[in-house]
Length: 419
Image (cartoon, rainbow, N blue to C red; front, top):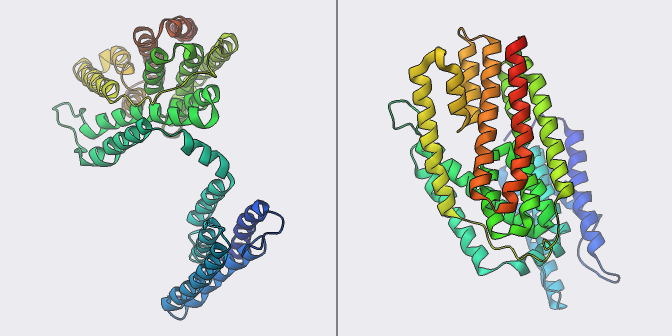
């Protein structure tokens, strides 16, 4: 190895800072009279030891680091033996020591991000000990089986599917379609975990925002299905659906902004208006919904593979129809193509319009086409909620989406008349 050329002092400071943070957390956990090995002073020293061991190994031999780590591990093992002999069976502090040593070495080797992220994750696990144990106590057999099934469709099946299109229109990609299945199932699954961790109401709010960034359509499908199983949550779920659908507007805008600034400028005002209307409607729904019976609800695991598969098939069909319409209609049918494409995938139509803008497509035409796609996609989500959701969800989402769709149509009409 060669001596690293990175700046020494900032890395040394970060090494010590990570050690101090973990050490402070461990010190806080100590009870009066405890004589545990390690605290707020020991952890930064261990981090520094790891850093210096990597430094020495860089201009001698990697064996130096391996031997020093082995000797330190032996010291930690002796500490654990002494602690365990007093009847204090644990090991969290000892394992933390071994990790901190590695963090120090990683920082010297310029893997600062890996070390920092790992240290944050370690802090989370150490700090939320009580909450994590409480969550484990709530885990049921159904949850374990659902986790295994989700892991199978994600880790095993997804990578095995071909990542190429199988149709003459170059649109039906098995891996992309299955990815949508995983996305839908994943949103439902993550929502269930959030409900257990931070409560039903806040879980819905957080998942709506995160899901809106990933796929507001998947959130709508998941929440609509959930409303049938837990009707008392319909008000919260309706507000969450509208919120997720609202997040869609700025998300698509950012994609366009990164690739076509003129196009982004043309749709800036409608995006602001649609986002503001959606946020206000979502806020109103949350204020007027009832919480009666929510806290007493016992939620079952929402993993519904059949529902996800049905949506995957529907997604493939609509995507194929959209591509065929766009292929045969050409530039003359750009508005119709945007309408049909908006039913399936806003990312696809946004990227298509950006690509067409490199040719002869005018920016105003692209802007109107994008608004049409926004409107079509909003109608699809309103339809999903109406036909799949519980009666109370239907009423609430119909009210919320009516304002959004009306705002879309009015702006499109004004834009066409006065452009």
